[in-house]
Length: 86
Image 1: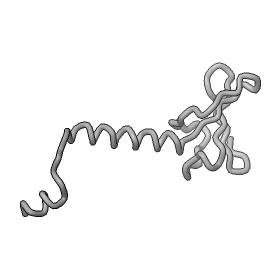
Image 2 (image 1 turned 180 degrees about the vertical axis):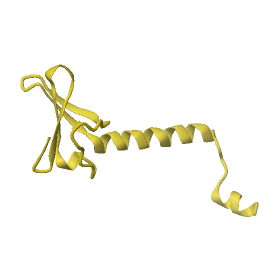
Image 3 (image 1 turned 90 degrees about the vertical axis):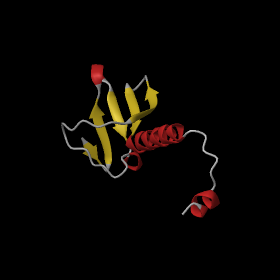
């Protein structure tokens, strides 16, 4: 459900997931829609999990960048080197 821009999602075993409006990253989930989010905190007493789509996207982008850099290897070329070759 969505209330005042915040989203509440059902998780397994009676846990409730809470996504504050600022953590939705512009997404407004619809009832029944599956979403991917990062766990930010867990409140055992309230049985609530604070989630963030925004941080999930950042983590995914950061991992993609790290993977790209790893594939590039130890390049020592400078911008000047590249421009001189053309």
